[in-house]
Length: 360
Ligand code: SAM
Ligand code: SF4
Image 1 (tube, rainbow, N blue to C red):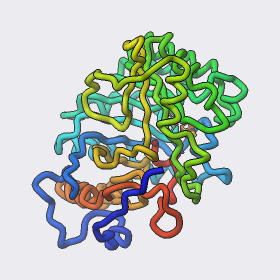
Image 2 (image 1 turned 90 degrees about the vertical axis):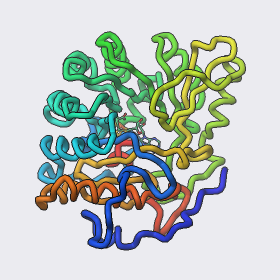
Image 3 (image 1 turned 90 degrees about the horizontal axis):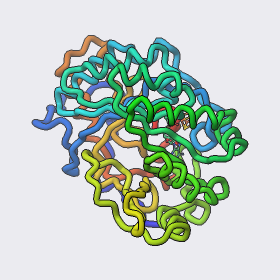
């Protein structure tokens, strides 16, 4: 396990005390989306609901989560307004997530509306795929460009257990419908020791048979209150080793994927068209190149998945704030973006939020 990057700058205590907007002494910098570590935010992830039709064991705590009331969620108009301000600052790409984004009422309409926000050039989703067979066509018509679909196992019983009742066949139908409708599809699996570690090669083959890329996500100990125990987890290195044992040597992919995301891509040396991605937030983390911020369904802007710090943009809007006020609040959040996550830390300062509310 690598040493966790420790935050060296002072914690912005005032941020915790004041959850909405920026303090009076704060001046919006020339580039509100550039942080203290010279990272430029290019990408906004928007959770459109904290509800889900699955309850994956690694995402939802055993005792469940308290859902936000409808009145607490950003309305479509509020989301358009906030996204519009981000677009004005240079964000071109949106990822809609959840919970499960497709369970938000009138989700297709929301996609169409956000796609029309001036400056936004691409809207994509991350989904469990359960409703995708029916929605893929309408979503493409609404302007959706791509879908990352979660599929952790190819064993129907294991899938149902892991997701608390999910239907694997239905998700596979969703993946195939999304491809047929013309969406750019990527597959995601959380790599879980003792659960799907014997299936990594089969998951790659499932993707390759469809001309897709399988991406393995290192399990993050979010909201579990425990330290990341390297010996009990599947590391990026272990994933690569397993795939290389099954298919031969791996080499880095040379495909240019546009705005860099957290995944590092590899290909089979013997079959370069066969690629896979690994999202390693833990053992080979990418904090130094992080280019994203996250908006929760109730309007909290989180500059880092691995900290609880948040600035509530919905409250700025509901409080009658101007676009300038929103820009200041966004800049304040971005200036507070920590150098690195603190997933390995317990106690005060460790993140307590749940993945289902954050959207991955
Ligand atoms: N419901 C959608 C889905 O499952 O794709 C979108 C929301 S989900 C929170 C987004 C991503 O986060 C999924 O790929 C999911 O597998 C991943 N995820 C959830 N909990 C995780 C955890 N503890 N560690 C790593 N990835 C996690
Ligand atoms: Fe729902 Fe996605 Fe979390 Fe699973 S990973 S419980 S599908 S939000």
